[in-house]
Length: 87
Length: 95
Length: 98
Figure (tube, chains in turn blue, brown, green):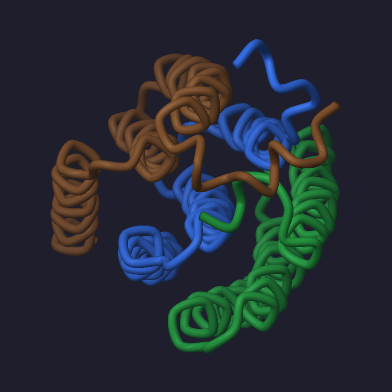
């Protein structure tokens, strides 16, 4: 079972590496942000799969922090400038 | 099992290295910041792989989350200042 | 290999399939909104199936609760982010259309 979970984690890791292409070439910034969000979600999947493989149950707290900060990053990205701040 | 772990480590390290190179060689601030956020996520994965959940927590919270959000705000202001003729659409609806 | 492990492996495989489909869609689809659609599928359904597959392997009760909480937070973050990005892209305002 452990080898199977590690194989699935490897597949998700390959997905992260492929999503890097879209982050690098993405024509608009929102494309890059979407790819970064997908990389974050895949990273959560990898961490959840690694926790039983490496026998470190505390890794699920890392996944919790990942999922909390995904919302923060996207919200900070799409925040609109309210004032023209000076110039 | 061990061979799989080695392949996983190789893939993780190569992705991290490629991401670092792309981040450092990008010229536009927003692109560099988004790549930096992705780099922080992958670095947290590395710490998780090395069985250090506390370091992974700190890296994900501080490295990727907080400083990423702060640097996005800083990059937005910086790019608004240098390319002010380009985003005239934003300047129009400002009071 | 008891049936619980078999079922859990099947769920994890379905989740990995959705992740791959989302990544391929993110790279191959031509338009920004269709890419957003592929991304949210991978976020919600893929991670949902992975969490569902890992649920029987949880060592204790609270681990399972935390797994469900991770999925809930990702769904909330994915919905919020998709709405914000789509709204910004649709109106074409701000620095988004560089």
